[in-house]
Length: 473
Image (cartoon, rainbow, N blue to C red; front, side, top):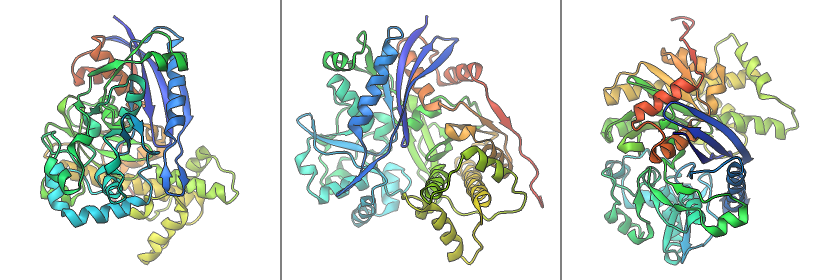
C-alpha cells in the first residue's frame, strides 16, 4: 500500500511544501513549492507575515493535489511563537521570536520565579524567546485579557484549514508552561495571570484534526478533501524522526539554529543539565529530545547579509572554498553567546567579541567564514561531550540533518573537533519526519521509530566524514 501526503514545512527563513509517496518499503519526496520567510519590522516590533506564509503554503498544497489525490496534510514549523485569538479571530500579527521584547520578558519571568525552580518544573534551557517570556510581555501590555485562545503557529494553520483548535504536544513542550509530566502547569500560569483556558486541548502526533474545510478547498483550488493530521509540529521533533540513527547516535539539526542532542526515554532536569544549558523537549512517541541550542548558520547568513549590504557581491560556495583553504589556526568564539542572537552587523559583533577579550579577531572573508564554522563545530563538540556525560549514554556517531548537512566543511570540522564520525543527510529531515508520521497514521508506513528511520536510511544517500588528526594532537 502506497499513500500520498503533503507536508507544509516552515523554517525561520524559508518554507516549503513537499508531496510524498510512502509505503513500508519506499519513500519518495517531491518539492512542490519553496518560498521565502522574512519577518517584517513595524512600529511595535518584528512580526511574521503569517497570512502570506499561509497563502503560499496552501497554494503549494493545491499544486500537490493536482498531481494526484492526497490522503492528508500536516504542518511543522519553528517553535515558541503563537497567535492570540478571540472568538476565532486573530487579534494581532504574531511576533517573531527575534523581536527585542523578549529581553523584557526574561526580566518579568525572573521577577516571578528563579531559573533553577523553573527548570525543575519544565526542563527548558534558558532562552530569551521561550513562549512564557513572550506571554509575560503580552500580559504586561494587557493583551491576554482580550484573548480566549492561544495557538502555536502550526496549530494556527491547522485551525485555518479545519476550524478545529488544538495544540500539538511537541510544540506545547517548548512553551515553558508545561510540566515535565506533560500537563499544563496551572499554578505557574496563575502566577503570570495566564488562564489555563487560553490553551486548547493537547493532541499527540498522529491525531486526526479534521478535513480541510470546503471554504479553504474552494479558495485555493485544492482537489479532494485531504485530512489534516498532527505530526511532530515542532520542526526539530519531525527532523529527529527523520534522522537515520540507531543506538549510539546523536543528532545535529543544522539550519538557522543548530539543535544538538540525543533522544532519551525521559527528561533529564538535573542541576548538571541546567548548568550545561540543556533543554528537554517533547518528541514523537513520548521520547524526549535532550538537546542544546547552539545558534547555527544564522551567524553565517547574517554575516553574508552584512557584506552584501555594504555592496559586495558574494557567493557562498566561493566563500566556503576559500575558507577550506585556510591552513592556519583561526580563533573561535562561543556561538551560544547572546551577542549573536539578534539580526544585525554580525562581522562587527564577531570582531567585538574577540576584542573585548583581548584577542585578535579574524581578518578577511575567508578567515571570518572559517572562524564561524570552526566555532560552530567546537560548540557542537562541547555539547556532544556534555550530553554523553550528563545522560550516561555513549555517543558513537553524529548525524547531521537539515541545510547544514550540505556544508561539507562544517561536517568535516565537526568530525575533527568531536573525534566522532559524522553522517550527513538527509537535508529535508523535518519534511521527511512529517510525512512519515502521516503515513504511519494512515497505516502505510512502519510502526516504530526505529523502523521509520531504517526506511530513511535505505532510501536516502548519506555521506560519512571521518575525524582527521588535528595539528598538535
